[in-house]
Structure formats: structure tokens, C-alpha cells
Length: 311
Image 1 (cartoon, rainbow, N blue to C red):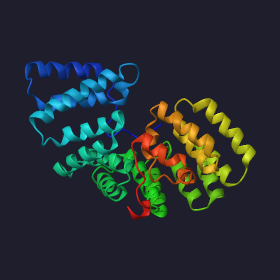
Image 2 (cartoon, rainbow, N blue to C red):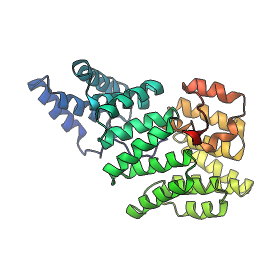
Image 3 (tube, one colour):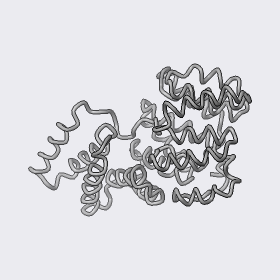
Image 4 (cartoon, helix red, strand yellow):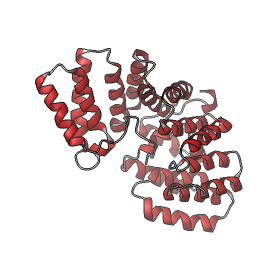
């Protein structure tokens, strides 16, 4: 599950009508590149592709983007959209990072392109450049709270815990009820060894899923095993079909490696977007010494980088 805000803008209330208008524009002017990219972006919007039509929507978007790149190989927006498709739908992480770098190189001042590229780079462990791009994106688009949340996570992965807490604090000053922000602060405090503070932080989370997620992690850190397991079973019952990756994080953090790998496999089957946060994820560190870990990375098409703190 990926609760971060989309880098493709806000939800249109009438997406089919917008698609019809763009298609009409292309019938009048087939070479209208901007309309092709707008239509591709619309088809990739989570509000549009949810459900059974996702495969066709992505295929149509890919075809539109490719026609633009065939004519204009220097289309920054085209490469950014292709990076998004490769990353979010194909899980071709290396190709997504390559396309994103090209997009950012062509238009380094575009906040949306920088965010898209950062997501692709972070997945393959290129944290330094991913952080620089995302930090610049936030500077250029300070009201994009989804990018701020992701920036805090990148700082966590890099071991910059105080910076991460500061980033989340800034986010909460702009929206005290932003889903996940306090749970993400709780994550950082757990990594700092502050279980009691993490529990208090998590209990202030407004989103019910993230509040329970943070609480289970904190209870495990406090060695309150029975209470944590009871809450874990509630999480599995209520959210197991959509939050397999977060469940795997909790289990790995608690040291239950067998069940953690089981839930990682479920995340893979569910196409859980959380798997893009595998490399550098400190809540999965107890799995690294397990002989199953290298094989798991191979399954994902990833490889372990050097120390995240060096990236």
C-alpha cells in the first residue's frame, strides 16, 4: 500500500468528460502533443485506473507517451510519464530510474518531474540524488504535502532522523490531520530508541490504519508481545488485503522473519506499491542476514546497495 499523494495532481470530478474533450482535440489536431500527454496522464490517474480497466488504461497511456517520444525524444514530460509507467506499473526499476534521470536532465526546474524521478531513484537505492531532487521539488512546490511526506521517509532511510522529524513537523504545521505523518514520526522515534515517545506520537495519528500501524510497532519495541500480537491480528483481518507490505515491516521489526517473508510474498502478489520502499528500509533490516533476503531482492529485480548512509 502506498498512501503518499500522487505526483500527478488533484482528482478531477469528471475524468471521462475530460478524456472525451482531449480525444476530440486530438481528432481535430492529431499532432497536438500537449493533449496527448494530458490524456496519458489522465489515464494514469489513480482515480481513473482503479478497478478492472487498469491494464487497458495503462496500455493506452503508454502508447500515447511513446508516440510523443518517437516524434520528440527530448520531451521531458514524456520521459517523466514513461518513468512513472515503468516504476508504478511495470516494476522495471532500473528503466524507470533511467527515464526519470533523462526527464530531470531535460527540465530540472519542474517539481512534478523531480518528484517522479526521485521515487524511481529511491527504489534502486540512489538516495543522495533522490533526496536532492525531492528537496528541490518541495522547494518549488511547497504545498505538495505528499512530496514532503516522502522527503521525510527518504531522510529516515538515509539515517537523518532529526531532519526527518523536522520535515514531518513542517508538514503537520500545514495540515495537522495529514494521514500517516504522525505514524511516520513514530517510525523515526522507534529508530532512535524512543519507544514511549513513539507510542504517544502514533496515538495522535488521525488515520485509523496508520494509528494502529504505529501502535503495533511501538508495542513490539516495548516488548509488550501479547498486546502487540492481538493488535497485529486486527490489522491482518482489516487490512491484510491492501497493506501486506506494512504488515511485513511490523513482523520484520519484531524479529518474526518467517511471517515477514510470507507477507512480503503477499505484497508481491498484491502488487503492493510499498515494495518500492524495500531498499534502505530500516524496518526490514532484521531480514538482511537471512539467506532468503538476496533471493527476495532478485525476485523484485533489485540488488542491495552499499550502506544507505553512504548514498
